[in-house]
Length: 501
Image (tube, rainbow, N blue to C red; front, top):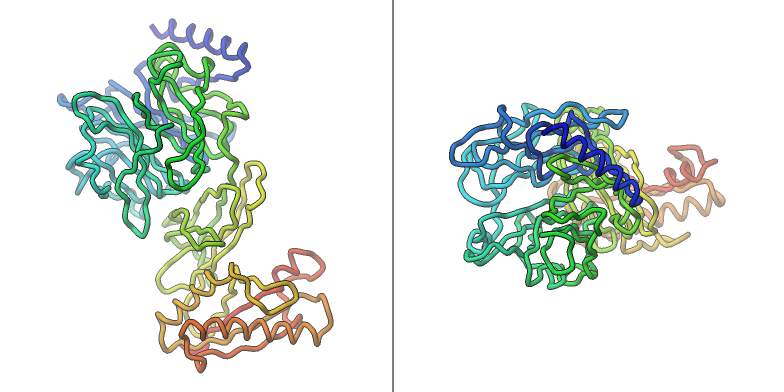
């Protein structure tokens, strides 16, 4: 049987090559003599989860299919190491499935609502990586889901941004046709499932949704007319934030779809290869340009104590700098402080780590101009809230050669307002600095006026003026060499020093 499958795989590879596709089996380290299904590639492309059926190491139960989650890591040469059983708490006596992992790898989502290690009901659960290991999956509530979902099977996925849940299920227990729904995490709560617009949730059965890292491009399967088999994989792009308006779904064609039931399409943030099942094995297929999601930037680094440089495990949020809307969340590794976030092009972003006892030093990244996929390293610093600590206020913008604050600065300054409100006796000194362009008199005046503008904003938000002092130092206290653009940018800054805590 295995020889026949190998011959079939070789024949399939040759056929795909003739069609202009590059198909490659992930080999015996990932694929086994048992069957594999429902692959999920992590956003960074470094780990693959797959459901493996009937393996003797699986968690067995006479009441449920013998299917557990296994995983493999990508090695430095691009190959995959030998798949390992994921183990408890992710594999139980029931059907096990990873429906998503955060881009940093520190949060996992599974199918089923669990509490204290026990399956409670249909739904979803989340597990966090802590210093001592993974927490027991804990169910989270999606309002009305339990009443709406009446189908025999369901399929789900979580976005790399950790705040978008896609669900495919049926509301009629008499048939198993599925529609696709979305739930959004906002202020700690998930929204009621909203059916996607009629181009996606059609009169036919639509399921196995996967949202690419751009949070715009959707891959799903459907048995709508015009396909090549009993169910084909389609692609569509979201046109706005209502989740109702989409481009016309495009069938990915006979190069991807077969005369059978095709589903469970997954793609990393780089958008270079699709991962899917062919003849019971996991394969990767080089994506054509028109099939790729929109390009994104993968940002990774470490969350560190700004004073000691010790790693910190904590939460990270990223925002649209223009509106202040939260766009996604992540978690840094509790041991190393490592984090990863994925930022789609088209916005100017602010992102920060948050931890009790520290001031969140934010970073910004302007991705308003679309480019290609990139990976960038940037550490996030948390400054301890203590007397004498000097903290740079990032994401503060003035009109050129003026002391007028731009509206993009308000989100950052509101964080400082919160710090002062949370610490009602705190007093701070605000200092303005410039680069070396212009004469000393001009730079001293500009830096003083900019520091005063920050004071004026804080007092307009109710902070008592006696808690605030300010001054400007022009170009006299540079942090970096003014001979480079990067150095000049570092030297143009506003800082505050905690005078009294």
